[in-house]
Image (cartoon, rainbow, N blue to C red):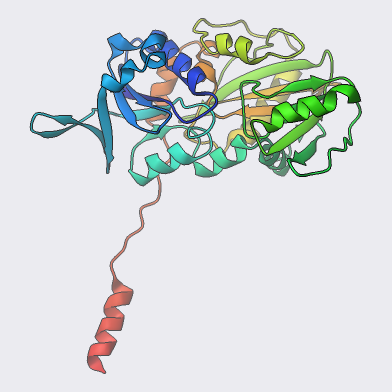
Length: 346
């Protein structure tokens, strides 16, 4: 299968996307891969596989690569006689954060009729914004922890008890996130978070809470990963998550009760189907007193959460063969013809 990995983007998570793409080079061993880089100025470049290393991007050398144009049904590059199409069976969207997760790439792929693995437009909008994610989870009967929404110009009065965790609404990878244990630290933490976003979510910080991660998709049937219990620290900061996104070796199944495992899987399926069809997502859950709560949806998880699957590449191929298709609308100009005909008679 010819897979085009799309990465980079105009995003605070630009560098993490590069790490994820380099990791895919180790994971996808059977497929033919094309690397499509979207730089900070939103120019597309075709990167040769042998050149796929972090220095190429940090040095700016990528600008010597061929530029890519989009046209209906394909990507193309300039060639000796006109242009040459890049052979692509499916595009794997690996742009984390803005551009990749907010719906821009999904819109672009659908507009140009390119088959792609990624959340579609509506799913992107709802999962990119943590406030909308909370409202969506509630609509499909999946619980989430209590929260307070705060905009930049709001009164900075906290309605939750300390300690709390402050998160920018539209960012991942722990960027701008702080744990606040007393009122003395609140103003500084809010200032930091508002550097990255105009809106924040504030949640109670629950020390020692059990956390579990589950990834998956629905191809011709459900394909769910093992359930991981991630390493437990107060929280993973940007640097630790940056390293975490380069994982390419499988982790171990969490040692949990089958009933709890079933509850987590059920919550995942409620979140996924039908909104996230065509994508591989990872959901992070909290378990409090035996109840499952959605912590967050990772619509484009780091390295596509490949480390949670027995055979990630085979699953990717099955999903590529079972993507949702946009309904074609037949336009026959019957209405205009009828008007013209009526005017002719008049």
